Image (cartoon, rainbow, N blue to C red):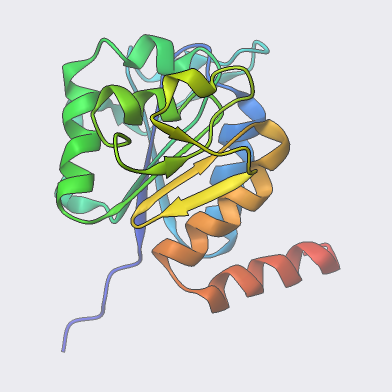
Length: 184
């Protein structure tokens, strides 16, 4: 019998990504033993909105959506840059069509709207951007089917835990909460 592979989440980023949203999400997923892969739109070295430079696992041109269980998008300037990428929008639609988890925080839900995923869905977005959504909600985190959205960096931990719960299990999310409560 073949050992089941670990759950995998794709986190695409572009220059200007929000560091709080990205790093909180990535760390939360990793603490749940989820395999996180970060891919850059412009290349493998990216700079966040606060100037933090990171090296990604590869370029968006190199991804195979079938190798992942979910896609998670963060805000900052990243969605603005990714909105013009057919590759990114196609990947988002592919995840959704395959009933995989599609998650976005901050300005990230703009990409879900541009990909046509939020027309009949409840979602939230960074305050002040609600007119970009068909059925906006003023909640911190909203789950509607396989779509998870969160409003802002202040909701990054709650968002990350909801992604863990949806991709892995409620038990995995509880485990991470307990690890964080104890400090490791």
